[in-house]
Length: 544
Image (tube, rainbow, N blue to C red; front, side, top):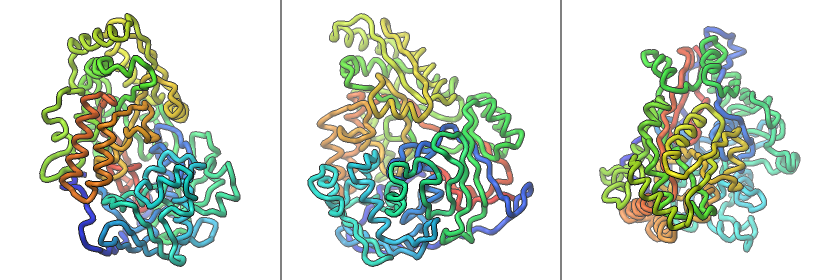
């Protein structure tokens, strides 16, 4: 979605009343009305059903369709009602009051405001170790709770009876309404958490759900699972599908064969040849993502703390060759860390403005300049040879990417790069524990604001696996989130300056923006897609 300006609360209180979308019922041409089953291919494994601990797109997709937050994200980054039927914001932008509908968990118990309070408290509780707890960093007393100087009960979220939730922020946050649509802020059943203990969310049977579907058939490690219609969902009558069956298929040719044979109704293509073969087919959907695939550099490694080395690595990468010749799926070269065609302010695209008059163009391919920076960096380090390990997922696309990067980087004299392509869960674990020199990372925007990317590289952010730390960068991001939060122009400039600082210091190496080349059978209707978040909402999907 192209957003014309940064969203802001404004100076007056307002009430947003949200209308439910409707979709006409239909029957599948290939299945009976009692077995309306959509077969979906995933590229990586499901990792968790604990909404506080989600870190990957596949797990978020399952959770956002098996659970319901206060609001839900729909087409074009619009918000639809979830458990909240309406909400209001105070004049100072610090207090959000949500009015809740009556709804149930999949065990038949009622969902109340206390479940939202408990869910947010559990996400912020240091004992939970949620990597996404920072989403609540504007909520009153967040910092004190995370530092254990105040109890979790002091977090600024309160239940006013069963069906009114009040969230108090320490400072205004114009995009908070998007944040409440994300899993870490979903309601959680304290009874279920206590019942299942350490196994909570580690398999589908050790969880309860309040969304249109329930997850079944996942034992914590298998490659298949299902979303099955949740009859206790408040809007069950609008749900069209009885079941969505997910299967992990990593090999591109196997995936294509199974799509063509009818095993999959929806699948992701891989590589130029597969995409070209479907270019004239109505089944091909090229879906742009508000994303960035980038390299994180572990700066606990003294070699990667050297700025000249980092500049050399970035300039040695042929991004156009990677996107056009190796991937060939519509993905395109990144202009910076924050994606292009993502957000505008006063008619200016963020990524364009951040690239203006930069001292260093980090995303160009210039091998001769790269060799000069490399030689200078090695001289400063007193080295002639360097070996680096590059960690990534083992899906075909990432394997092709790391092979191309390895080939590019080998042109720097004295550099050897060893690739380690691992299952998604292992690759994520390596990233979190710092067992890498370079790691291939993907971030898809959670909401339409540059901060969803820029806050990742603050020194204390749990997703800053490379431990990049720049005082000036932190100051710009802090100003945008603090003293300038209510001044759209100043806030925008803070964020632009943060991006410039990141680029000039090569805090990360941006590679490309993803376009998802998805093939979909004609019978699949009403699939809601958003370029941010996990992408797909099955609430209104049907088979005809």
